[in-house]
Image (spheres, rainbow, N blue to C red):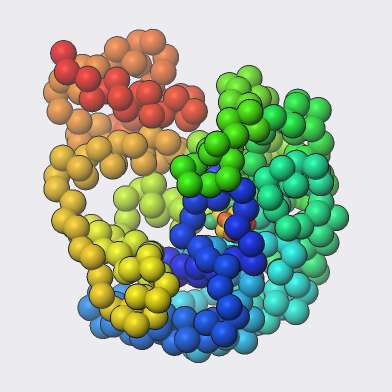
Length: 351
Ligand SMILES: C[S@@+](CC[C@H](N)C(=O)[O-])C[C@H]1O[C@@H](n2cnc3c(N)ncnc32)[C@H](O)[C@@H]1O
Ligand code: SF4
């Protein structure tokens, strides 16, 4: 079983981010962890997982919460994990201090995903980040010093400042650390964020996207999902793309048991009051098929041929003839992961 744990706190809101996170008083961190523990106990009672192959602490910014507050969470989870479990956390360069990294590593964290976004200060400022390039480099090397072997960084590209030279430099700086995983996201202008009303800050370019992919490939970071690259893949995220069930805990976090999707309140006050109040949604067979197609084709996971209706299989054959789709061992794979959504839309069209 997979487990997602949401930490909804941030030190500041970045100009592009629409994730469920709040700049809240540090006094709320401890009650939040208590609420989380209460929810975890209830969910584990219901779903009775025997073993957790992955745990992912996402946010928000897990590193802005004092590491010692995580101890009861790890104590609760220890019986369900072993040395093969992938235990990841997101972290921001300015709050992932050496001591935070060390304590989390001691608790069992073995993968860290640092929100670097860029090593260029002007670009970081445009994105509204509260760190500089030099802090990002410090955080990566401190994570390496602590002993993390599985380190990933996030980059954002497609801002008005991006050129091939700048992106090549960002990738070269990442490569210098010998990382085995990197996520590169195209800037999305999300509603209700400061950048939404400033379309001039984004430069949506297929040429830049292909350049990023090629440069990462040449840095031994091959693409395995639309935004994910590397030889040491993220098992937790692969679980989502393979449509495997997962437990989701935390304010606004979603869980999926294979039939139903459930979600705790996205409102921090309400969550703290009642972490066990869940909104439940049944996923019908048609929705499941759509989700499997969109999720499977965006990664090197593919989709089982037998899931497709005869008319969809006919359309798939057209894409195979056009060299947009591969069929291997009875599974369809997008040849170009950047085109996965278009491929699914074509498969869904009526004859
Ligand atoms: C849950 S977020 C945050 C993790 C952590 N708080 C941080 O900022 O590094 C995960 C990643 O999503 C990406 N992201 C968030 N909003 C985005 C947007 N609007 N466009 C592109 N990438 C985005 C960023 O790269 C970010 O690091
Ligand atoms: S990108 Fe990360 S640090 Fe910035 S607001 Fe979103 S979750 Fe918080």
